[in-house]
Image 1 (tube, helix red, strand yellow):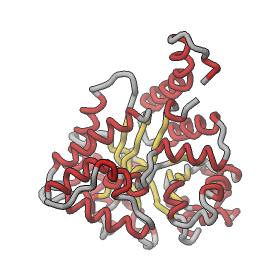
Image 2 (cartoon, rainbow, N blue to C red):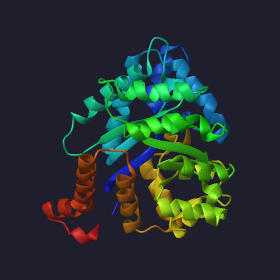
Image 3 (cartoon, one colour):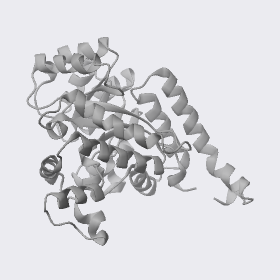
Image 4 (cartoon, helix red, strand yellow):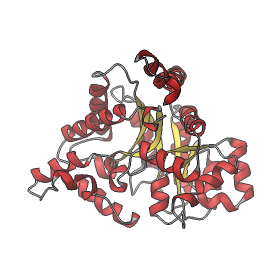
Length: 347
């Protein structure tokens, strides 16, 4: 059975780093920059090291001209996710990249929401939900972070706000104490990017602060006391496989992914695509590589989607709908084969 037919959940996808190369090429041509040929498009923007990503993201900011660009990109991405049978995606919205002059943070989310809404009205055979995880901009202090949380959460025009992300900027986490308290009060998610090569103490600090999700954090694998805390609080840990391979966290490539130890350690592991444009990947491709190199069975792939639904920032009724959708797509290839008169067990 093809992974293409499995329902999927992406819990960490950086929006500006997921804009499709075809859209980027159009924007580049608009500014007079040379565009890659159609045959070169899939590889034109890939990076060779993780250190190149900040430069590429800054380039995207230079291409963006208006809120309409954000809506165009969101429409294209949502269409592609629907085709990929991604039933839920949580976009990481980095205001340092996406907040253009004249736009407020709310304007950015409204523009992205418009594109997603247009895409989902075009088809009724695949359910897609989404939420926005707003990354606190840099520089951002205690008061600014708290004010951002409250301004977005109380804006009636802002839809699908899922939570906020603390970037891995190296600072102690005490500057987001007030913002996290506001998030808790307003039922918004709290995410800390711990990275994969930083001190494990950041993971412990995030747990103590009340983070509901850790991104990376594989440095904690050597600390049984922190693993115990992650298990006890059932804190989801987001793995970004392609980024970990490219970043050298998996020294022997895909077979040495930390995801294997995380699973064996009983952690609540989920997946994200991270920076798919620059990594030349999709969530489906991530799952295919994990399945190939870590020998995940079909049930393992299904379970990671189920955990993603459980870990996602969403209302209970949406969680129920997503769980139901996952179950429908679990059996859909069999149903399709039977309808066509084929052998359902020959998939």
